[in-house]
Image 1 (tube, rainbow, N blue to C red):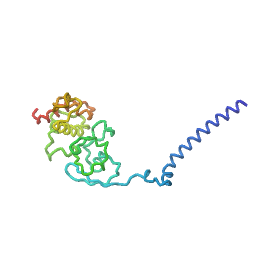
Image 2 (cartoon, one colour):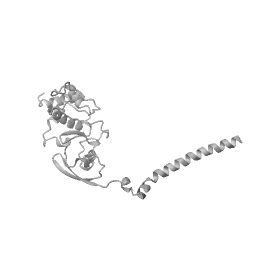
Image 3 (cartoon, rainbow, N blue to C red):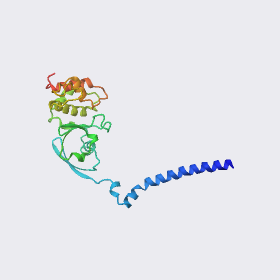
Image 4 (cartoon, rainbow, N blue to C red):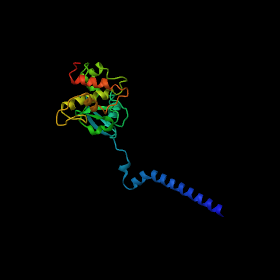
Length: 218
């Protein structure tokens, strides 16, 4: 009798587990149907395409996009501006850095539709025709790149760094936030810390930024 009782107990537990799994699966599968029957279809239905006007590298671009499209994917997949790189896609490496209204942002962390009529500058928009931007030229002079994958983001970030410094914005490395920060190597390194170079060309990057800050005289 004890053996039969144990067998029934084991079967009962297994049956309960199987039943619970089945109920959970049916509940998950049935959520959209339940939402529709309750009048909540909009919460489950993907949003429709939206049209947005972006000002990119000085010119307007009108795109019809899934509103969930990141600015990075809009640039790369819809406008073929592939200089902006997709690295971590989590805002940690800085390879996707672009300049929006004068400030640097990680384009992988923002939606394209959020930037209607914003002035967006990518690496392709820094040069003046056949003339390199001073920061680009400085990176070349100081060999501030190796594989080059992070370089577009590094350069866009560096351009914004000089603008931030000129505006008097302090950083974590600023000794006295009440005074204008001096652009020391520590300041440059701290301000560029959001841009990762797997090739570790950091000393050359710092030298290039200092060169550009000093007018390209070194």
